[in-house]
Image 1 (cartoon, helix red, strand yellow):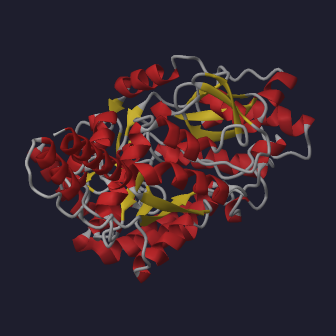
Image 2 (cartoon, rainbow, N blue to C red; image 1 turned 30 degrees about the vertical axis):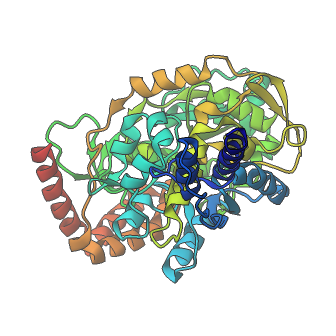
Length: 503
């Protein structure tokens, strides 16, 4: 009996080791080796059943956004060493540069090139558009099976706000939920010239600061490149930024946003700034504003904030960066969908892809490895939950783009309550009037394409201040009308009205 018991124990241990090395922790059914071990431990005299062949290791191809760092392969190898024992999979990290990402992903998706996971958002690799045309895998079942940890980590508004036709096709990063656009300043110049940024609320308020810096630093453009405008409207379709409703709307009637006093005031101001030399002369055609963050040759730009964002920006820049808000936190469709990872609808391994994504929301060691690289090589720990980046270490990754930000190390100068403040920030936001509305563009596809082309032909010149809005906006309005603006607005208005009724 002792020999039988010892032999059975060995079989159980062997089966357990096989399960730990190859099994899927989210599998609902027992593996053959587990069933065999279970029957023997119950004292049966049956011969041990033959175990199934070990599961083949899956290699996942992951496209994500960001400038590819020198040490990407080194970190990728470390990631694979870490995840393979956990989910019996490896991942090939393919980073595509910021300016190239959307175009290259469009080609990859259209060509059917094999991949498993890709970064998507409201501003790059169009999440809503790709989901509607079937490029991404429906995640509902995967979230309940292999993605429970990710689902539990996320504020429910993230998943609710990114549904397309009632289903999820992307997994949002667990980060700030609303949008709060801010003016961001180079503190070195603010301190050097005693600039008072506390009174800056609108783009018009920047003028005396820009004038001072231009006079004192004649070789420097105070605004280093195109800046994201902020107008008090909510848009049903982000690709058409001229159709919207006021944030304080009560009737939800769509208007031409560019044909409003608010838009004209903004455009006249940036045109005035361009003429004064506050922007680079080639700002309308810039594809890259240059690494002004590293050189420090800038005064102000515009960014979307989060709690203690100044610390994050200062750490990246290597000098002080301070900001003032342009608006209170508001949850828009595009802020909820500001950063997601999607699984390819044609992936051969969707379950394994979700297992990997789930780790990014539940495994602190993995998400810190991906975000910050290898300890002692790319960063050094300064406390149990804090670190400092090692300058010029050869690795950088946009932490906002994936996983659970709340599990990542703080920078040394970050307050200990940073992630608690994130929750408060998310809870404090008001909802934009069209939050949750998703347009059906099937009846206006041609007109939308024409309007996009019309927008693309003028947007950069108009919103960089390069051209005179008084002279050009009437021409723009006519071009939009000729491209189908009235038909698109009528169709979208019908959908908004129906959505409000159903809501």
